Image (cartoon, rainbow, N blue to C red; front, side, top):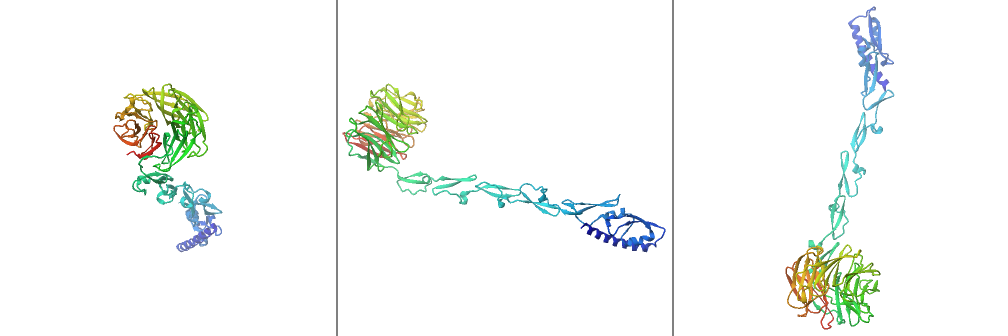
Length: 573
């Protein structure tokens, strides 16, 4: 290649020299004695030009063959131009030669300038996010589309958007794009990089199809329609149990479950209602074979499994007895059925978060109040402590975190509150301030939404019913001590005749021994500022109530003169 450029240059210089020679010969006629300096350009090596001194007469031939008139220094730039745009041609005047170097982007190889491939050699300098494309004498930096090439690294839940020199990861809204997997009954909520499925509250949004008079209850992913409230006027549900007494009632899956003892057959029993109104029942005897029978404040709770746990007085042994059912209807052999401790009158029971029973009761003397803490579900091991030598009629509530709260009648003249840690068996007792003298009997207890006790009691001579709302968890002071019913009469009630409705307003049931009627008083606010009273019907003592989340009141009690057990369900409003 270089030789080609030299030949081209030589031909051009010869043509120039010939033209110059002809002009020179016309100007003057050669003189043999005159010496001239010519720039001699060898035909076979044009770049090896050099000065020669010859006679003027001989100059013509040299000029015709391409030599140049005058010193090569005057023609050096022209002589060194090899005609290649890739080279930088430099004339060396001093030693009459040429230097040829390559422009940027080229290198000299075998006498020629060749393109440097910066992309291959890694000398391009393109920043991250760009690819190198080689061009003659240089290179170009082209943006890499990482999104198309799949090299972006955006995590799941994000889409890739290309930008110059990089990319962006943008959250995918699976909800608006319809790519979520939320089932019917759930709404899709977009979150950064993902989404979550949130239950649709059809009841709150009004998208349910419950009919008029039905109550919509939201469930996870759906809803249920229930009859809002059922009024049942003194249903005689246990006609074959005319000798039934000491009833208790709990609500399981929206249906009443009752316990009672039968002093004629000397058995302890459960009754499972088939519907809210308990129009039919399934009876189950859980303990039999006693000579003296069972009773005196039969008390039961539902474990976290829904299986009944029943405590009652075993008259043969004069002791507390516990039956732990092994199934929902107590049809199988009980998990446990054992005598726990002697005494066992006026029994109250709860279970902790592990379903371990905790029992409060009076000893045989009916004056010593005791607390029994079971170490397992079957109460195979337990610890008993004496709580108060003058305490009676206890009501237990489980406050959580291994603490039980108990209200009881202390000596018939004061109400005591005990808070006991069932792990350490440390109990602290407090006297509840009251504005009226208290009567004998139970002082039922509930815990309100503030964690404060609410206590019902009868006044002296059982002449009135009042409700205390404590101002703190220890009941060191009270927010209210309000009369619920004060018509002169004798009032009696059991440990489970106080409840709180869905607004935290107290509801108390009691037996009016003068009118021979069972009555329920509803507080119209949390502090019983005013009340409304309903008469259930002819009844008797051993009155127990329960309320469901719809404020349906369920009442179980014994009928007078051996009339057996009665059950009522009615709306709190």
